[in-house]
Length: 314
Image (cartoon, rainbow, N blue to C red):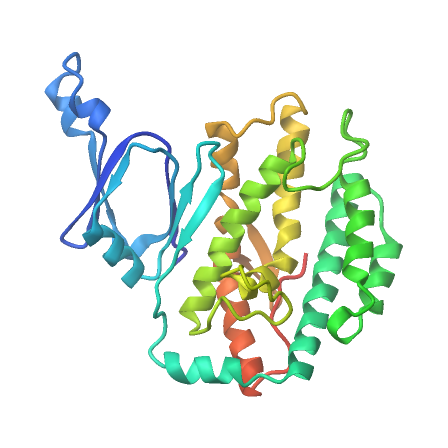
């Protein structure tokens, strides 16, 4: 069963009662103009075991320690947002697997040649999926991208990923009026804000799955920034990024470049990322479920049971 993503953008009091998240809306409870019947409906409960991601996007949200403990025990990712509604923090459980110590050791003992081969697989699939998204969004095939995917060597020392990214971002939004010169930058103009938000949701999904598979999301196979607590998540999410890009493209096409604020409607669309359809292992699956297959296969690569990571094919 796919876990639910819960988004809170209004003031709320979140607590725990008998294995349920209890959601109270103080603005409704204290409104003297509302009838008692409506006030009673202001309290909602959700089973903890059904929740996979919680997004907290309001400074007047109160969440109890008991609820946080229960969410983390059930391997839920809790995301907090800043004053601009952009994800700024991520909380994950410390222990997500019954053989945690053994799995940590297998991950730590992975050889450098193995890590380079896994990064090669990751970038090949990322570029292939980018090429597929370009074909869908622009109506034009990209043989150059496919050639670059074939050219990726162990460790990608030639930085084929960077060449492909430059081509990809130059062409993805080129057919939309006003975005002919779009530049992908975290601090850039819209739709960079939508991409940032979508990637943050994706990152949380991947980090959650890594913990569930018994691995340290800090220790990457390629990324190794000393200040980054989620290097492995940033590695493994790469082939999934094009799915976010395609969703953002559809939002931009629908709304136009003058309506790309992170409105509630837009955030609701981006919060559908866990349920996006992907094809992995020849079968269609929700993205959140596919990510767990990917992280499970990664661990088996560390142990020598598999030689390839299971990634989705766009």
